[in-house]
Length: 139
Image (tube, rainbow, N blue to C red; front, side, top):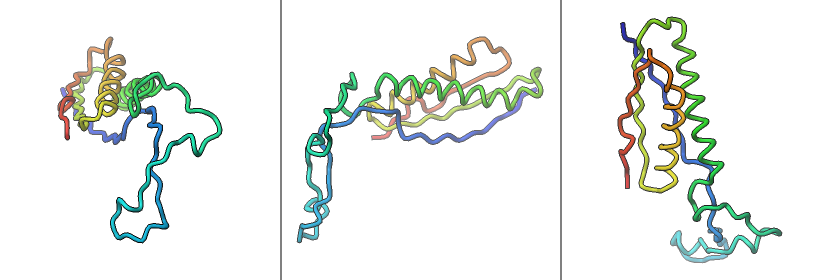
């Protein structure tokens, strides 16, 4: 016997490093264009201590950000399996449709999530898992 399980989890991306510049609104502008209201400034102008070394290029997942996403995948799969544990003899098919854009951090976020899910399922023989769209990338 097979059962279906549907869940939705919407994530933006992992914890990431930042750029040394930020965009701020210039309220003194008399122009009507959006670009005239935005000015790039260096973050160091607004903070008293230097930014930490994130150990990754700007806007990419940090090491800890990847760990958090892997743990999120583990938690998600444990939660699903706990829901289905009322009848352990049923073979359950769980589908994941994972979609990301072309940003490195979004692809890394997806892969870390899948890694966590698969870690939980390594010793499970009653749950069939399939991933559709893991490489569905939107530009």
